[in-house]
Length: 432
Figure 1 (cartoon, helix red, strand yellow):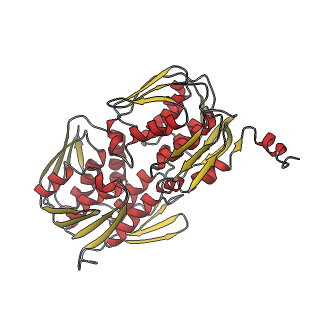
Figure 2 (tube, one colour):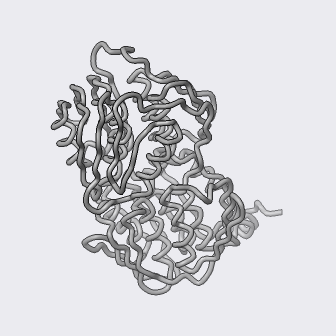
Figure 3 (cartoon, helix red, strand yellow):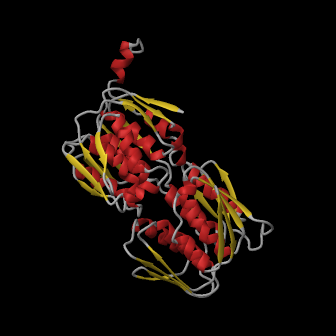
């Protein structure tokens, strides 16, 4: 699909879909819990659907009516004949969260991966699981799993992916005996691990934590699930419209946000303030208006998903912006350091890759042009926002990839009032 985005700022208000990071966690806890639960989830992205499909294949009852998802926990022994077929699509969270869970359940399973997911790393999680009772084998886009995890001591570095830690936090409470998880080295994306801890606690899962050492006692570790849960809106998706408000027009208001959220990408607010945008918060609404944007240094170690849209803001900010500690972006849906650079270079930005990030010299205005989304939802959405600072339209090839996280992105964007739209209508005979 090709999207053509006209240049200029936008004005209006938007509502963002549910957080897929939060939805993954709540769905897994509900499927492994003690009683049925209902999740109210505004906007079911491809990644959320992948987790729902995989949990259903593992024996949970999953039904959906509009934005309501009813989850009935998996019954031990249900669907035990043959290997469970787990269609995880391109969702790294689905794969990394459920791989240890499959081992804890002692299920034979085949994960079916798509896109770039088969290329994304699984070490050292793979090694840890095979050392503790699982058998894993990869054949192209298929990952075959057998065996059952043993209770005991687990140790994994925290500087590669927080998703490895979260997957183990879901799995170890399912084991009959006492288990201990120790997370070593520098912790990447600690906020995402905290989100997993919150979900476990919400569903009554018992564990003790001291520093980065978790202890899961022997015996039953799961309590009663909440009967109804609202999945809060997604700060990673909100970031694109918060940046859009800073780049032109009379501002964008994002409604319905949890300003006390544990989502790490809530840091978009102080970052936009640091850039120089006018940011105002009121209860569940945030309004961002243009200000004098200035470059700065950004440590992206805890906010990797924000880098493409922060690079767009930096390309239109005065002076130099250096984004550092972003090397993990090379292992996302695309090599996001490369594809962010390619996308913004195609639009006329002054940007180059560094060993661990990006170096950007801002301009008053970008030229516009044609870009390839590289099958990466965040590249497509960042390119659309960049049109606010362009002199000519932005043409985006492969724009359908936004379905991965934000199914209504293009409709939400087009519903906003565009600067100069009335003048355009008058020139083409559409004015009154």
